[in-house]
Image (cartoon, rainbow, N blue to C red; front, side):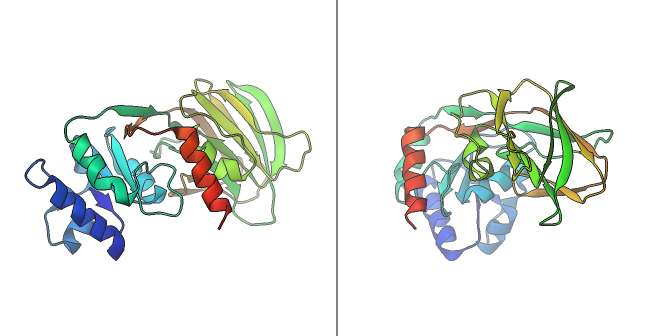
Length: 268
């Protein structure tokens, strides 16, 4: 189990531990285990049936980046919106009790990101990989390629390469479409492009996407809002289909849940 350190979140975690006591072995992430004075383990060393993340989407994304091999994830939503966290705190005990008798998993696509000419390991992108200017108000100049063929050349604040799961995250805020997670696609969404004809594009996730930077403007590569790397002038990145992530399947209607969350957030 993984969770944020806030008192309310820790309280939910304690309820979950009590719920499964005697029925299953519980392994806690090191930091929260220390606070509860229990034995813990690094997420990357865990070999478990499924991982429970108590927190917001950021908690889930950090856990996914830490995992060395795909482990099904169940999210308990303690965040503001929680698109990745399928279970609300009030429902977590009955849901977990039911899952102890068996569960199904749902596959979600991720993107693999590489810096051209370098072998530095980067986490798979669950939501998106973003290339963005490091200096607000300064545009980047870049070209985008599909399987080595030119797609677009732009001046913009940056560009988002998103999965269908990430279509409701940064990509949506930048004007991208909402895409069913079951669609095997990659979204390419320019951020504030200085070109009227520049529009979001959806391509087959099997296509290899390339980006080349021009000029000397400072840029940054951001993966899921968790991983940051500075890009130098004339750097390039390559984006391909990555290793999938798996989530514990909880019976719900994806688009009904999506509509409820968007309406709720809009009403604040």
